[in-house]
Amino acid sequence: MSNRPWTLLHGPLFTRRRPLDRTHAAPRISAYIYGNILILAVLIPLHVHDDFVGIAILAGTAASTFIAHVFAEGVARRVQDGPIRPTTAMALGHLRDSVPILTSALVPCAILLIGLIGWIEPRTAQLVAEVVILLRIGGTVFVIDRLNDEPPSRATLFSAAAVTLVATLIVVIKVVVTH
Image 1 (cartoon, rainbow, N blue to C red):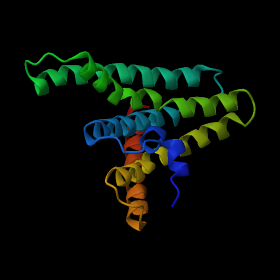
Image 2: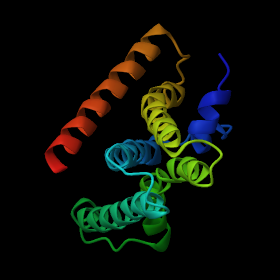
Image 3: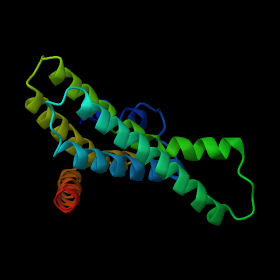
Image 4: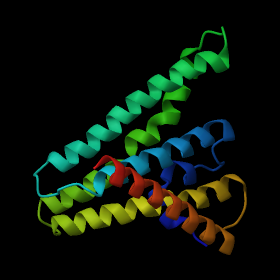
């Protein structure tokens, strides 16, 4: 099976000759799923006819969540690392591991922009963005298989569907409780 569609959705993890090491892959996958769940939870109740407001809300959600996550991780690292002062390389590595939260809004914002400029209907753009987010979340199972050096299988598809379903349930709970 070709990795081409997953490369589009999960480029940095697939475009390497060697998969990302587990030390950085695990927090990046966690940040990626977390960011995509939050973006989807914001995207679903969004009113896309509000000019650039919807795009700004998505970008603002990603940016503020990224900042909060980096701050929380920095505080938590003081417990994990103990009295060892983090080096610049360590700090940049941890910062890089959080970037998937920030980038989770890029594709949905681009899709909403396409709807905003009139190439497709704004509501269709919103639905496409929602489907893309769900594919990104489910697609992480393929990334995990790659990192484990396992070929995609029927179990991968079932796991991807299960991860997507659980993420969808989390989003539904978040939307219902907060809106």
